[in-house]
Length: 396
Ligand code: NAD
Image 1 (spheres, rainbow, N blue to C red):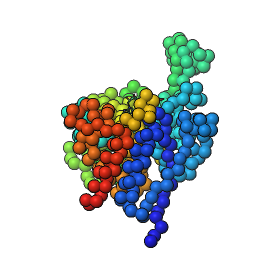
Image 2: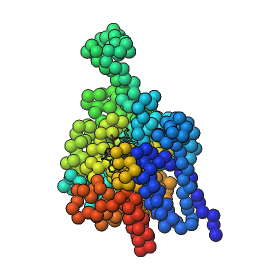
Image 3: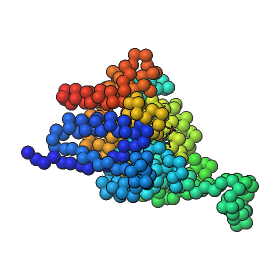
Image 4: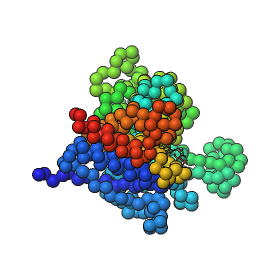
């Protein structure tokens, strides 16, 4: 018999509810791989330390071995990490994105039938947000009100550029580069073309922030023309006709208008590429449209590594209760299988999770909104998904 193909993947179980949603996720992913490939493929899980467990065991919140291991393995998955008070940088998550140059935060937003939603037609939402992850106001260059640095910057702007900033202002800096924006938009365009999405929208606030957000828009159009030629068609050139096969339409929308559009005309939007702060707001708002953060998968991806993660936090008050919804991490695991090219296992996970929910089997966060639902624990939900996997794959 052939030796199985074994792929080593790193995992960080996370803080708070992390260990329980990770156990649920691992059970589902292992079952999906085994059912899809028998003894031909297997994931070898390698634990990596970060957060509270790392601090307890090594005295460091983010050991350099963890960063090196993610770089070496190329793929890892993580539960949520509590932001430690007094850690040098703002959060371990932001640190991981910056040191590994995970420049794209990718969040698919799709409705799963049966999940309670505030929308009349949540099924019209099928979007993937590509949020730039390393630039913009998130670089953290900020000076407090009244600080010598803020006063020095005020003086510099007044004396050298004749610009007045109100006395006592706190000042933040918003750097956005053509290189950083182009890397993100290139990845988003490739994704849209590979998956046959009809449109890609650049979301920006370039009417007000002309050189940063406006730059993002312009760099996007330039890149599309220079690198993708006729395969990417600006909306202004398309007219009323259909999108030619194998092509994608490039649109741009102001950030404020985009929030209206995704509520009023969600079916017109597919892949969205956007700077960091806009993307932060939009991806959480879209997650709420289709049932909340407990359901939303996500990945932080760069050219050398990809880190898949639950998009919610560590919810410490629920830790150890075996109560919360593991769907966000399970669906992030499905994205990870897709990234590895293990498509059969990836779609089996998604389908099994959909069938579980459509039968009304849900954790408390969803069950409390639906009178006919059968509430299960976090581990009970994973068991139900594994049962669906077994039934789904044995019937094909
Ligand atoms: P949170 O997402 O942890 O929890 C807020 C509330 O959302 C919870 O009290 C709970 O009611 C609900 N919730 C969250 N996840 C759920 C799930 N899987 N199932 C059901 N309900 C769920 O947000 P917070 O309380 O603001 O943050 C707690 C900690 O997590 C903080 O230290 C924060 O910095 C950190 N955090 C980490 C990440 C990450 O690792 N990516 C993201 C956000 C917040």
